[in-house]
Length: 284
Image 1 (cartoon, rainbow, N blue to C red):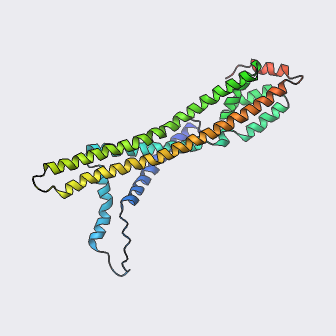
Image 2 (cartoon, one colour):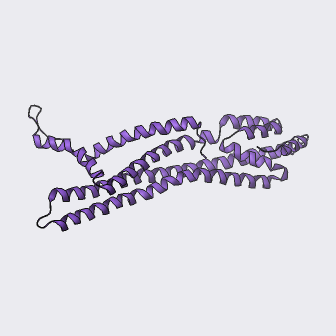
Image 3 (cartoon, rainbow, N blue to C red):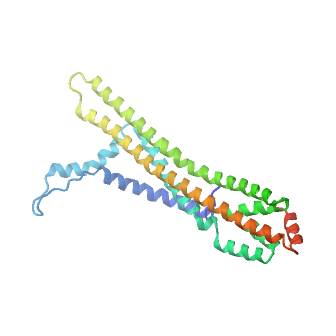
């Protein structure tokens, strides 16, 4: 499970993002749909009434296309709901995947000082109390240090893989969204085109241009929504995958350096009893 500040903060964040993204979504769609009619009219010349009416009805036309029938309504609600969840997940991952949280400088400094003073028991207790990525990896290695440095490194590698896979599972949801977005848009495309051909086939003479345009508009609008959902999902998926890889490498390298330093200090005279006591401590 992701370790953000606390559960209450996460719940508040999700609630805020739900409201913020919904209004942001409506605003962004307004920008996309409203025609770019920057005319060269003078300030004293009034705009023609038909153009004003077109600009006024553009947003309503867009939402009518989104909720044209049961299929388009279902697809639109799914895309909106997934978009809200995606934005909330991105915020959570931005808070969780930070190098400063994975490797706390104060913890590293205090741990190094204890190891240099050969206070191994205190260093082990410090690691067990540390919930960061580095703390969990070091705790696993120190618990196996009595069996040799290689055994300790294997334990750290296993813990590193475990922590990384847990975080990567959350990132993979963005990949799923990036795959589902175009497919949901395609459902809308096919549904709209079926409706368009049904309108043509049902007409005894020339098809109703208004009904035909409504079906085609539904197909294009839902395609736009699906692509608009997939593009940011794919971007953030790659971004967080690369960030997690960098954090994992940094944690693994630093953990190995700290464990090696502790191992060599434990081999100095007078350190054997301290390491034995540390190894005998049960891990939480």
